[in-house]
Length: 299
Image (tube, rainbow, N blue to C red; front, top):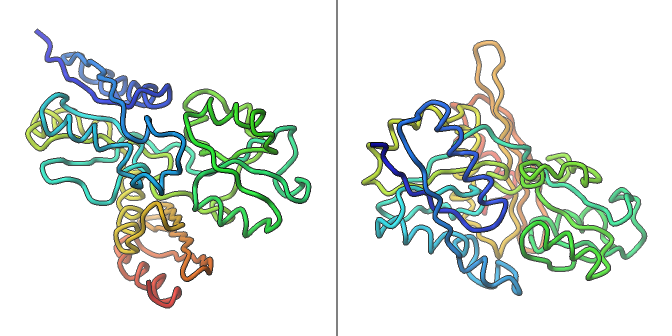
């Protein structure tokens, strides 16, 4: 008899697609497991009329799911890693999985106009403080209009609120097969992504670890693991939350026998937007982070 593993997921279309992606990858190698998806509504899903920064930050998308894990109601959960606070509750483990999807932010225009060619005073939909400050840095004349909800809800807001466009993450659109509606991609050095944008993670109770280890090696990606670990370390070191604009992107690459990492960070300090990047060997990551902090004049 096959063991049934209960997998917790938010109930949005994107969350369910992402959860199924992880399940499908495990099934390629282990047919001796059955999976049951358990839909869980989080506070962040229920309260869509307020910005995330006003209702509790990143944790609003995960608390109910983590509670179900700790109670043993589910065995594992699939998350967008960028939604996860940098501190994981005692008794739980968080592991980046699968290959990272495109980490960039994208602009979806109402009429196909590129972002820099929009009319003066254009209205752009986004509730992310990180996106707002970087877009304003590019175009100080534009207005940012708060929008929340799933991807299709946000797309409807273009017409409902008479917006000139909206900014979303490329990853979600790619996973839903909506690449064709993207007007342009923002390069990571122009709009620095959110830490771990495009990365999925599995969260488990420590009591499930023995079973999880049976298929962990099939769903881990070395490059993604390195990038996620560094970006989450940056979150921890800078001590930021949803009330403070912060972006971080670590890009891993191998050159001959050397493993290198390029780190881009954008950080708002005392109403001033600071941006910097460093490159070095992966074993020198701590020194690179120290260098970034020094360039920012402390944190």
